[in-house]
Length: 162
Image (cartoon, rainbow, N blue to C red):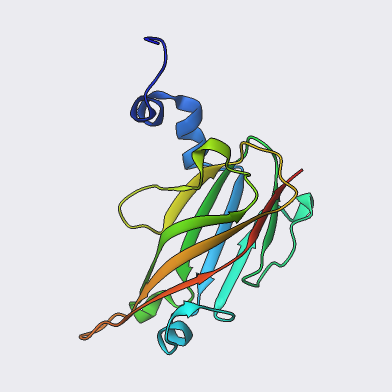
């Protein structure tokens, strides 16, 4: 057993893992209309979220909607970045978690992990073949200004492998 690396050792020492985190093969950007979302009660949302990925050539679909169907390759690192549509508003957005409801593209890792303190960037590894993994992503939206307000939202996009 002495030859096995702990999770902490892998994340700090494995150059392939570090490269995957820094430059994931599959990049997913989530743009949030913070003005709209902050005007809602939060919870399950059906508008105000726009998802894009760099896998259109892999048959991804649903670009620009919150029902993005990302098709990545087994072994791909998937980077999830959340941004406010209007960066000048002073609002902030951060991913607070993932929950897998069907499928297992992430395998034993379970779901993506947060990278950095801000919470706006998470990375996962597509370990398993999966025609469709349904996952719920949870995001915290906070307004800028003197009296910030916060909403927690979630929705259910999809990931599949080629």
